Image 1 (cartoon, rainbow, N blue to C red):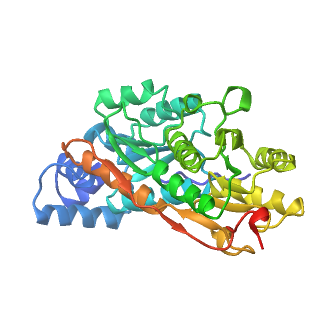
Image 2: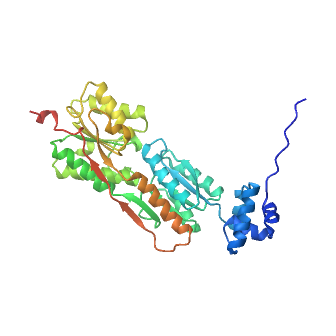
Image 3: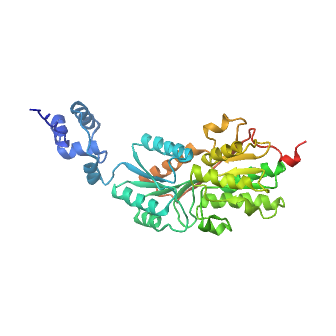
Length: 359
């Protein structure tokens, strides 16, 4: 007959207290990181906990202290290298301050975002960092703010919600990137984004509910119009929601007689598929189509030619937003901050004059 191994009894706060010859309440204060005890007693309790291999029960500790030591994070698309690197910044800052992180992915869908927020609150997280999927429906974020639980926004600002926010100047950097293409002689420039709208066709900025995307499209169109380009909005393409959809959008964009001679991609995942379709159609970069993308992903520097990129300080975005939230968790009551981090453009070999301007 097969014997069942005996269950190992977990070490409790009471066990640590007996080993350290202190009361259970004193041991709990030391192990929970709250209250005041002498340095000698703290050292005795810590030594006893280490000798017994004590592992804290996080739920019990949260019920005692009112703190879980956990930060909840909701991002738009964890497969996107942008968010992966931002989460790394958040996690590093959280760990340095003694916090753990629970991550949830909204898939850029508002109902999934709301469900993720509910789940994280149910896990008793101390505070939340959220990348809002849209700006028109933020009742769940308002509820968090009203409850007093610290909330900070990553990458996307909400003008009507006064909380700590860390972003870049999306409109300004889109203008700079578009100006590079205009200065190279391009007059048919496309902007490709994963954000979608009813009818899958861009008509006006009012359709776009993701703040960063709206800012970028606005900057793109502003420079095009200032350059005298007629109806630049006809080249804004929505709905590049997956690799397959990005390929479909790009293939259709490049199949017309009035195909664009330059493309600005909203992120490196879109740019990779755009680059692939350009090559599949027998076209060259930048001979036939110039290309610029947001985010300096690893692949952009090793292609032939290497891709001109908008280099966002992604790790710093994550680290900064976590530091702001942790500051709140430690009792800071200063007015909310809206940090805008600097962004640069790395010019490589993917931009040249349009075909009709080549010698």
